[in-house]
Picture 1 (cartoon, rainbow, N blue to C red):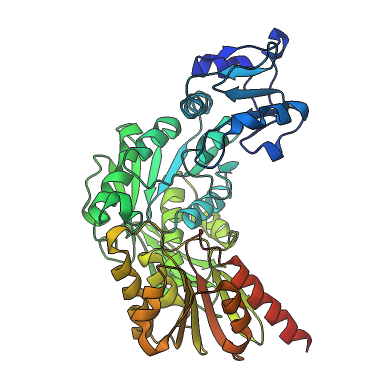
Picture 2 (cartoon, helix red, strand yellow; picture 1 turned 90 degrees about the vertical axis):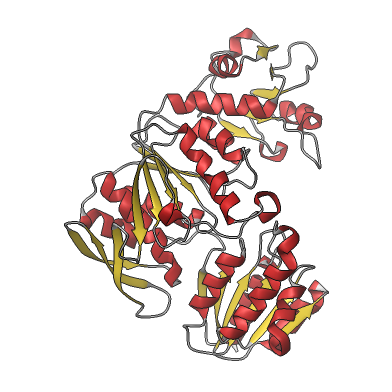
Length: 455
């Protein structure tokens, strides 16, 4: 059950109540923006989007027993509605109210690549000592974060909040809710260039997080990143990375099996061995970010090492599925030039013929054809044997791969071709932005893996 009442919400967003006064002291069971998820006790948020208007579903959710609706349109007399001029603004104000009730430290995580992995790693480490909240899945944006915050509990001892943006001003709005005590910058890469233009623009947009932080707040930044290592955040800044300039570093990186990582973590006066059940050497930056945060919050070496061992991969992010047919690297949640290069770098270290299934990188702006083409060129330079692509922009990846590129214009043809493409012992990377939905490619390969194992 949500900890704040309907009356608390009305006070926070300066809304108007048109329902039964007896409900003002009630607490919603859950908060939903999808009418299909509504049920008895729900607070339904009626959002107006490009594709649909949540207001038209209000009768349905009330029929399901929803406790109340947050909306912009009045209904029939007696319907339990919190009326506001702007639902999005009201969500942010309610979320900020809930945040104000939480006395424990909040760690905000931003960057171009690896936010979710860093969030999960930091939460795993802090959980070795503290009851830690983390944003679920990728609820990291203008809608997901307010919904998440409205359901926050004061019982936690720490919170790790992923903060995703694509335009200027968005981080400022998120920070007004989160008010982080600590901020982690994973890196600054070529993401959302359609709106942010270049890496300097990405840094400016991400750095808006500082505006909502106190002067004694602490920043953790990737010291191997060209822009972050020289950025002045006006706050205490702890650099993490592999370079000598970093306060928290890693040495002796190795992998016994290709899908886990071992290293020695080094910091002033501290040194310990770490074993992380995660694929890809680029994961080391999430490891070091989590370590740096853990050290700042007072965890011992043993607690940090235990937390790192407890890390679990989330969803379709660098998930490895091994079988006699092939080693599948399922990384099809998101993609941009920085993450694509990192994924290729990691997969080419594994033994076997290298095959990539790559899709569109979204929001690349006017430089999109060049950025896609360069990924194809990079794959060939790193030794990838075959680059299969699907998507209007991804065709440029295949062009960059030259003779090793193969572009598909028909999804069904691509899926039907996979069985003929794969050979026993292959290493297969599947990566694209979320929009192209490459999950069906992953599912097809897993189906073939299972079929091969049973034959």
